Amino acid sequence: MTKRIVAEVVKLISSPRTTGLATLRHYPMERRIYQRFGTCGFSLEILQSEGDKKRRFYVLVEARARGSAKGPKKSYERVGGDVRCVIAEDVDGVLKYRVLRGRYRNMAELFKSVEEVRSAFYERYRTLKPGVAEKEIFHVAGIPDDELLLGV
Image 1 (tube, rainbow, N blue to C red):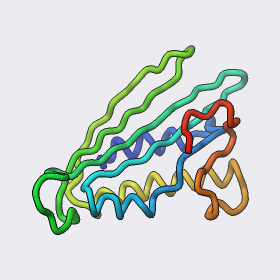
Image 2: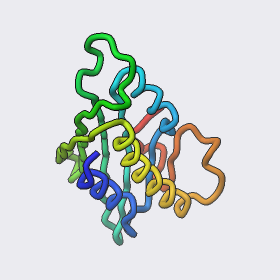
Image 3: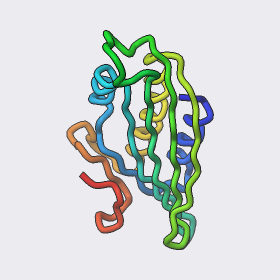
């Protein structure tokens, strides 16, 4: 993932205005999925508050190795690929989109970037919802159930 994509997503997560986060806990499975299919991704929901004003962001990151699902493969570990990050912001009930694109050289570089985002998520998540998060499959803090877009 490019540094620009990582920086943008980490900035949204780490903002002092971030009062809510949600994601499915899927990181351990993403490596396995990528090894088999050459593609993987994750999504986040981020709620930011400032006074009475709330901003809601939805983030979808997808990575696809060059040549994924085409022809026989032993591994995708040394194959580079493309990353697409879609950031949707709910503005007065209308979703406005920004699309960021990047490339990665190999699986190690991709998952190093994913780890940066994951670390930022859990650092902020633990401040919003202290306690043990390891047993949760769906992580949510600060966003009421009836307002969640992400579902299980």
